[in-house]
Length: 193
Image (tube, rainbow, N blue to C red; front, side, top):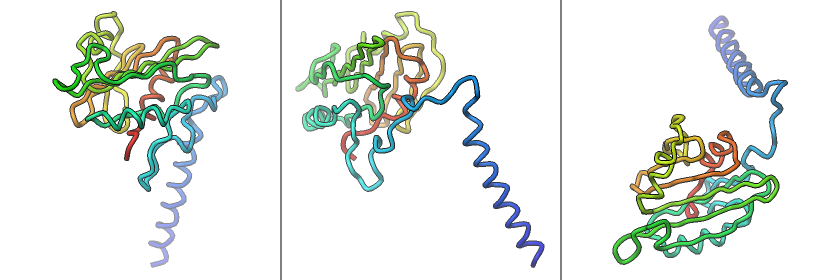
């Protein structure tokens, strides 16, 4: 029994060492980790069912749209430093099919002055031009990206995703890195739990 107990303790110790090594091996001396690139600890909806806290003090605006939308509205819980909500619309935006013929779409634009940048979110049933823009603008398909637990297609300056309920989600960026784009998408959260 003693050798089995020692073997169990050894496995636990090795597992703990491996987890510590994994956590510390992502940063390299040539590329220091930047605190502005990771979501804040309070950003994503809590397991207790609390609503999401949207980035750039935009929570109330997204909650207001959720009251009218027939689809689950997502908001960014992380944006790179300096972004503010510039515009948010719901209805027949981006060529969307709006009520009574369809669920419409949400369009939200966040901007940053220094350095200049833009992040645009489109959700719902937008027009075909909004969905096809990454492909028709010549952007390369880079792979897949996580979007609140479901997968999307990662382009150079955009992510296209379809939620399990069949609605379109698009994030398009200007002067924002691909890494930041992926972090924004991964930190998207439903406005209502």
